[in-house]
Length: 304
Image (cartoon, rainbow, N blue to C red):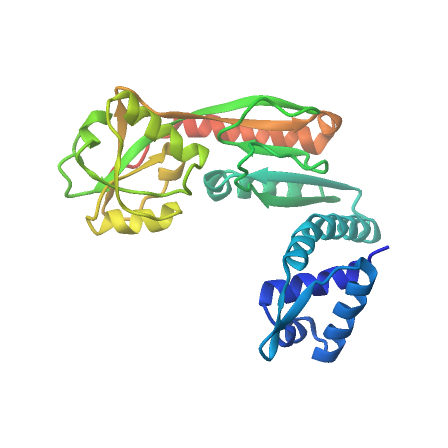
């Protein structure tokens, strides 16, 4: 059986690219790290590292093993969390996944309320990862707040929370800043500031709306997050298109205007693990998320 501790050391060496740096981070001597790598090589029968000048570099096999070990080590860390819960007297754990704009608005409120109301509850929070193959749900995930989604995976039930329309965000001095609504065709000649990863599902929604209007956006600035995109817009370098939930607290000097003809919309839903649906913490979490969604529907967006 492969020694799990040695897998952790291999992952550190691959991540840092150096035995010495891995040793410094792990609190070992370089010779101890090298000995563990040698032992892991013996256990697996694979060449995991190779000489590169005075140092070493991982082989393809070493990189593959380190990558695959991440899931195993994550599962072990979760088991350690269960042990800690039991030792400290906590009887329950709720594992929740969320996307970025829900994490900036809803999830902190939901989590804080759950921890106040359920003294023996531990909440494990995970940021949603972009998966090329669509939604991937780990077996220990109890609840997931999703912005774009395929069909519900086996063992989970989806509940719709909110239709979240997209707005165009412009500098306050922009020609569109005073508009009540902007037809999406009006953005055809504007320089766009990107705000998400290429081919991210939420990014595709406004792009498809542009296609319906007969054009493709001209991206002048590439960024992969909302905050950075807004900083470029604030300097007058372009416009950006964001979901309404992400426009709750715009920086000073920016204006968010609704888009029409057509209006891009993402559907926000929550996936609930069937096996945990009846527990009091889960029922309360769903109630709190529904409250957040209702407040969002009633909220008047800040547009100046």
